[in-house]
Length: 397
Image (cartoon, rainbow, N blue to C red):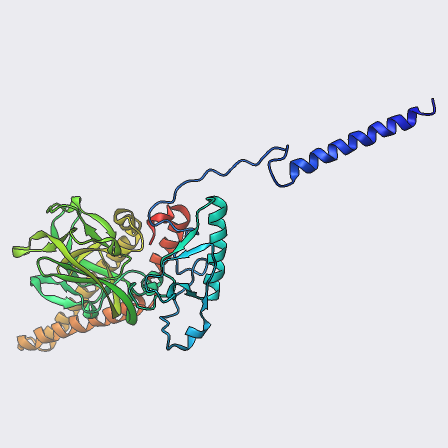
């Protein structure tokens, strides 16, 4: 009878030891006996997909570009070499230039190399370029990403009577050649500038066609492209300028106010000063004789044009009211002058013209102060912010 309590205590201790051993085996490294975590389902990345899903110039990714570094630069001494044996460096130059990088880049690469080996055993990370010593890669266009898509100041738009006018001299309220929704060439009023900065420097994609036309626009601006030559506007899709390839076809102005497809024969990059992005009633316009969209940074021209509908309605109402007030002013000026000096018809006409011109110029000056700013127009920034929340991030530049 006296052994019974000790026997029960021994059984309880043995059971506790077994449970502890099972828990240790199940929670420790290796397969164990516990329930294993389900492996995360892997999905392949699509073209132009970013992880994280932001621009590479965002602080959450690589950060903003800080300028080119040469061996003679003071900042060259801040670069470090990466001799991680788990990373394959291509080193085409045979100078170990690909191993030079910033300390932050080195830390991120080492982490990425570990993640690659854990995910794909036996596979190593490969770096094709780190420090670009020879400048073979195009310069960074973070200015275009940060400040929106635009055209250069030297771009020419077609006015009435086929007159050409530089974008640097264009004003809101003027009419330029564009394409209507039915595919007909028509004049469309410039409502405002989504971005206007005369002193900003940006990288532009220079597109040259077989017909001799040449256009400069930022890489994130939309241009209408087709794979085959066709005159129908509906057959052209809007895409970022950086996606245009030699052999693609774009719509250009032809003889007798017609349009014709032109083949892209050359694409290059060039740095220029001044960025201009006019928004027209039709959402497109001809710049340097090439049909382009008024929108940028979002690869769906139709959706972008629909999103700007409230703004187009508002500015149409303001424009109508301005024209009515201007007409009343001219009539009033006419009656006053006729009572004072009805005999001098030339004086009357000149005074009416001067009154109309000065009033319209004052309206334009006041409008330009409000609309033409160095930053992207607030409504466009608002749409982009909402779009990145509710739409597919892959549609953004």
